[in-house]
Length: 97
Image (cartoon, rainbow, N blue to C red):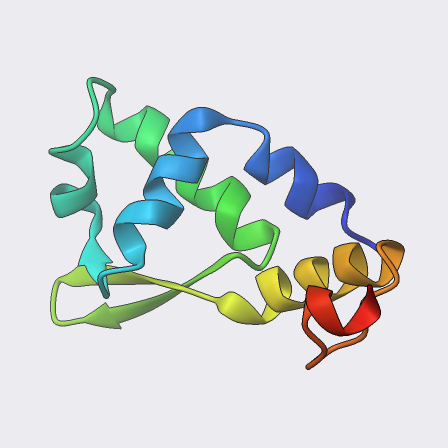
């Protein structure tokens, strides 16, 4: 299915927290950096891995790049995991019991 990059990206707690922060909406790198005790270069590395995995998108606005959550890949992963449990898309867990 090609989830290797996604699972690698999700395996790191800092990257999971970046995704959690982006749930609230687009954020610039500087805004994200305020939430972590890491360098700008380290944050850039994490953002690059998330972007490569398709978990975030970026858009340049003026002199800043804003990052947003891309839920498409997360939806694909969730649907795959639900199929392993025998639950089809749109079906609740209780309907299967």
